[in-house]
Figure 1 (cartoon, rainbow, N blue to C red):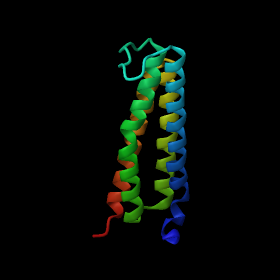
Figure 2: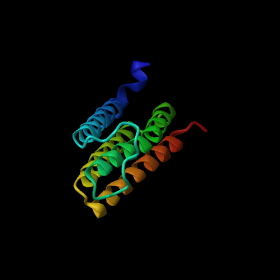
Figure 3: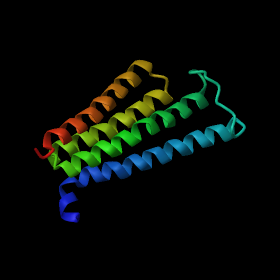
Length: 136
C-alpha cells in the first residue's frame, strides 16, 4: 500500500496540513469566544463586522470543504491520477484555504471570494483528474 501512495506524498502532507490548519482555526474561534465571554451553545450573532462571527465563519467554511476534499483526493489517488497534477492541485487547495482564512479574518471580501473560487476550482480539478484516470 505504501508503494501505491508514495507518488502522492505531497497530497498526503496536504491532508495533514489541512487538519492542522483547521485545528488552528478552531483554537482561534474558541479563544475569541472565551475572550468575548460568548456563552457556549448560543448562536453567534450574524454580523460580518464582528470578529467572533468572522472567526466562526472561517472554521465553518473550512469544514464545508473538508469532506469534499478528502473524498475527491482519495478518489483521485485510488484512480491512479497523475501524481504531479494531484500534488499540485492539492497544494493549491491548501494555499487557497489559508488565503480564504486570512482574507476572512481581515475583512477582505473580494479577495476572500477569489480564494474561495480557487478552492472550489481546485476541488473540481482534483475530481476531474481522478475521473480522467479512472480505469475504462
